[in-house]
Image (cartoon, rainbow, N blue to C red; front, side, top):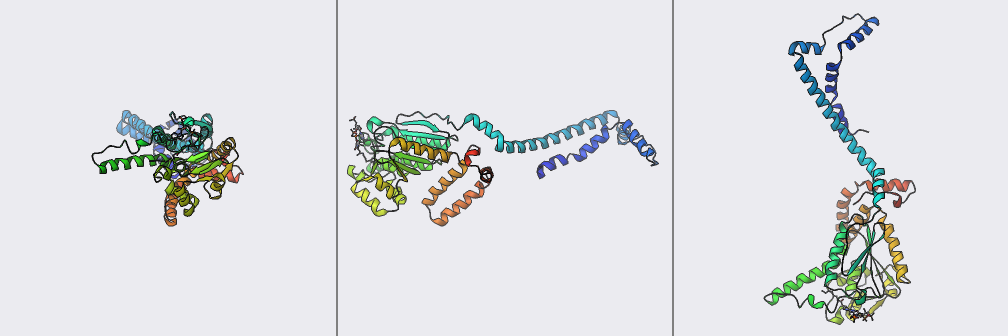
Length: 390
Ligand SMILES: CC/C=C\C=C\CC(=O)SCCNC(=O)CCNC(=O)[C@H](O)C(C)(C)COP(=O)(O)OP(=O)(O)OC[C@H]1O[C@@H](n2cnc3c(N)ncnc32)[C@H](O)[C@@H]1OP(=O)(O)O
């Protein structure tokens, strides 16, 4: 169907077309049509001088030819504008429903963003799912300077990668992580420069904010991050898992808010996020002040993890399955949900609802809504739908 605009584009040519037809019609045509009218009994005088002839008589044949040419060009221009509008509309339509399928089928959700790191390994686990591994197993994935930097680089890239819809984060080797690299800790405090204690303190603060960013990027990245941890998850490891969206662990896993044992207060997220996750301030306080281990069973009963698996292999398989399920859905819906979940956790219910309403006043205009609703009506799943890249 033509839009009002397209119609206008086409129909605004009508007067020009009439004029063009009049100029282009041959005298013989007019004579034969008038003869036909005569035969039909209508007494009419054959009028041999039409507008073109009168025009020729008045302005000369050259002027008529010039006008004929100008009108023809104008008509063709207007028709081509109207056609372009139609083609654009049709292309958008077919792109949404079929062309995009062919285009995406050739790409199949494989990320081509390069990820090369010292401490992380990034692989394609499933369609549109990346697997990020902490990859310093010989040092129990202790968090050194390179790690703090590379996490930011990695998750900022993932945030921009439209071929990645979900991430699974795990640790290579014997344990998930031993927390901060104790051999490397001087980087936070000792290496800070400044001409007086205030300036040194200023720079220490700057460094801590940088360290916080290492885990903030997990939250800022709109793609859901499933963390799957096994064995030890100590100190900085707890800061890390609390910034993820979904937490799974193995039966042998434990967490330890170990900071007090090395003489510091946890400062990169645990104290802020853990109480909100498990909703039990008393338990958080106990874990923090004592640095005792919390084993997998308690991690599940307290709500820190939502699933416990028998071993790492089963856990990764389960995590990839869930990530793949998430990745098959509308990225606009999933990522919009993450942004709003994070926002709402940090705000009151009325503030969260207000933000949501403002968010959806534009997002409800997505084609994903119609595509998903149609799939549901046809008893299909989002896996049968091809969503445009985001
Ligand atoms: C701004 C500040 C930001 C963040 C602050 C975070 C604070 C914290 O993270 S506090 C937590 C500090 N971590 C620890 O106290 C854990 C120490 N490690 C262990 O307890 C154990 O290593 C283990 C994790 C339980 C694993 O035990 P095991 O499997 O027996 O391995 P090990 O033989 O002990 O270690 C193997 C290898 O790894 C090195 N290593 C282990 N942990 C760390 C670490 N945290 N930092 C640096 N290196 C570590 C260990 O030295 C061994 O290395 P070798 O070269 O083979 O000797």
